[in-house]
Image (cartoon, helix red, strand yellow):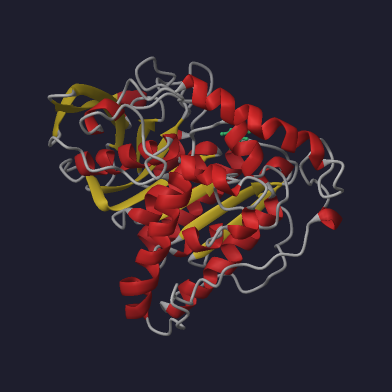
Length: 413
Ligand code: GCU
């Protein structure tokens, strides 16, 4: 396989070198100037692949949404293959600490184990629940870059109410929310290129040792793990599994959208600075593009996605259609002004164009094509958004807006 990757990267290299010459790209071969954004057409979200207008919620749910999910599955993220041998899943509560954060929360470390005759893999998730709140509690499930096994998830020694890794846990507890951490690296490596460890071998068919071109890359595998965490939460009486908001930043923001688009049990999705393959539109071609994505991270997406390198125009989908698959459940998109690699304007437009489907389903979407002023959050809409000054991170300001959105839609409304 290594050979295939090397060959493929080599065949992309000359294309990269010629980008600046054809006048289309600049700033080191990506567009980072609004004036250089090429004209583009978005595929219509409410027209079926057969060219028929989608006019009712039934047509959306029965025809168009499945078509769109299949396109994203087969061309962008990769579908989850059907394992040849059934996989047994078991849940084990490894530890319970009911006196966490001075008795304000209970922390459970839960091991989810997968096994069949091909092998086994496991992930440990953390579940924090507010001791003083009415149970079962709604929860924020964060897809995290942090490893739940070597922590950072203990109480911050100097910042009261925060976890050592900076998560404002008390803000969640105060609003009656639980907090669940699912680690991205549990079942698949961050920049996986070999697919010989973790969850993959359990899924392989006889004579298979690598995902097929339309089968899951890293993002799809992590999205699958989020659904397995939700399977556990459905058995945990302290959590209301019907009110779980999934949240992630950057690569995990992309994963959040793919997980929520497919698994309708997620009640709400918050996608922070997800950029390329997240909320940002491919066809705008601003900031990171398909070429950058697959050359730097060859298997975050599936292998079929490589066909669209410098050819995003040929994609039969764009990312507004992914967000639309989350409808009618609320979705929040977050950008940072200086996070140009992730294309803040493209992220807004992804959310804006998804709003068409929210309206068809009787929900509130974004109504203006113009991005809102920096620092202003749109909360009381089923498609929410904010862009704040600064770069690629989740700041306390962002957390507060995310929680406001989750509380408004899952508790107050
Ligand atoms: C890289 C990558 C982005 C991604 C980011 C992250 O910058 O190009 O697409 O969002 O890493 O996950 O932090």
